[in-house]
Image (cartoon, rainbow, N blue to C red; front, side, top):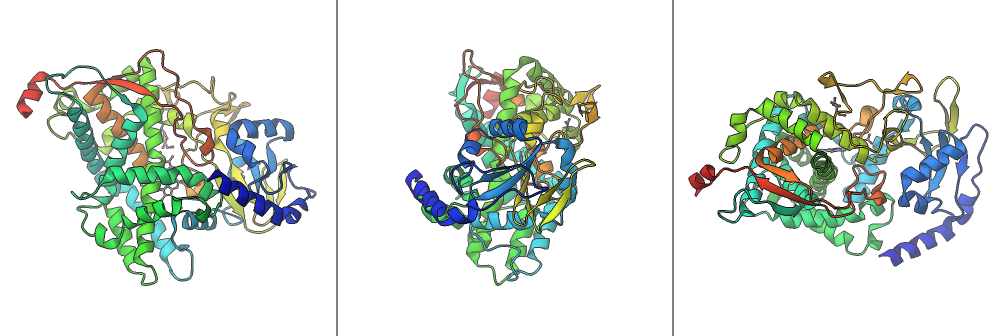
Amino acid sequence: MLECLTVFLGFISVLLFCAFCSRRRKDGEPPLIKGWIPFVGKALEFRKNSQQFLSQLQQEHGDIFTVLIAGRYITFIMNPFLYPSVIKHGKQLDFHKFSDSAASRTFGYPPVQSSLFPGMSDSIQRSYTLLQGSALDLLTFSMMGNLQQVLRCRFLSSEESGSDGHWQEAELYEFCKCVMFQATFNTLYGHSANLCLDQLREDIEKFDGIFPLLMARVPIALLGKTKEIREKLIRFFYPQRMAEWRAPCQFIQTRMDLFQQYDTLQDRDKAAHHFAMLWAAVGNTIPAAFWCLYHLISCPEALEAVRAEIINVVGEKNMKLIFEEDITITRQQLEQMVNLESSINESFRLSSVSMNIRIVQEDFCLRLDAQNSINLRKDDIVALYPQSTHLDPEIYDQPQRFQFDRFVEDGREKTDFYKCGQKVRYYRMPFGSGATQCPGRFFAMNELKQFVCAALLMCEMQLPENQQEAMLDNSRAGLGIMPPVNPITFKYRTKKTGANMKREQ
Ligand code: HEM
Ligand SMILES: *[C@@H]1O[C@H](CO)[C@@H](O)[C@H](O)[C@H]1NC(C)=O
């Protein structure tokens, strides 16, 4: 696969050599950094460690600069005080056109904004309200049931009879993947006895491994078996199959009905949309679940505070019942868990490397603040890189450290963070910004809380001593929550009492 890529990039670079070499910085434009390989530009350095690469450029060139990365000129805005002007210029700095073409290329469906599908884009945007508000109550209820079912099954099956209370070992990321994937799938798409979700998950993981290259516009034909895997994933969601799944959530049901209204949409295209949504729903949530649980069990003080908060809200009685029957934790109860919420946000801060991308629609001059404006060219990319804010030592004391209550003050959420004496508005943005923020963010937040609640209510967890710390997989920088690169073993012991055990047999 790498050979293919090299050949491809080589080929393109020769082709585009002249065109790209000709670009020179014009007056009023940010400093331009091209690298010595045409087309590829600084792509390799960027991929290796983007945070380090960008902060080095920031030191050399200031808060605003343009870099050639894989054939695109990207202007980075590295100062959070300048974010608002980018977020506000929705008209000249568009997100949807870019995400539509990137998503359609990546997941293999025709662009939503095409004239073949009048009104579809707006209807899809409207369907996102079904991930929020009162619809979220139902999703939360359903997720809680599914999580408990999956976790119970997992904990009880790995337990040899009579060995209750013994420590067992597992790999933490694998654990998070299995549990979150199945519970999220069932909550969104429903249930069916005939589905092999483990196989589906494996195929999504394979696809996800290639995802950065697809986003970088490497044609899928050059990526080995990727196309085959993608077609297999799409086949999973054909309408006639989905019709047999029991109780999909209102959001997915609405999307099924919506796609049904378009004769111009083939069954395969509908299926590709459903596949894309599953990817969006699990792609970031699973690594986020990992980091949250990992940081909590790495830090006894945090674990104790969060556990106490959960038991306080849920009640001891429910805690004891969890192996016997489904307990409910309402959305309102989840909202009370401020230490848990802060821990999740702190994990986001440390692991979110999503880039906020906008495409310049016309040549224009972007006014950033009283002192700064820059000229931008049509089709260039403007990017916010929140990780540099997330790790800014002026905003966050000891930024590399996980501090579970960083976002709590006097028992409530803390929202005032300062840089150079000035209050920062955008100090943490794992879900994007402005009008294009992730529509699943409320559901995701709840899911993560529920996952931690259920896992901590069901068992004790520890990390064995002398284990290497979990490290971020930087090769995926720009694309969301980073997964860990190295395996992490954890020990767990269910809290199921002997009495409960007998009753069940
Ligand atoms: C920890 C979990 C999650 C994170 C960190 C996350 C992050 C993001 C980000 C950064 C974007 C792009 C927004 C932008 O660039 O302005 C996005 C878009 C999106 N996310 Fe999420 N997301 C998460 C979970 C979910 C879930 C659970 C769902 C669905 C159930 C979901 C559905 C979507 C959709 C549909 C979009 C595209 C929106 C559009 O094109 O208008 N996400 N997400
Ligand atoms: C955590 O982050 C979410 C989403 O960004 C936000 O709505 C919430 O208020 C934050 N809570 C805390 C305690 O930081």
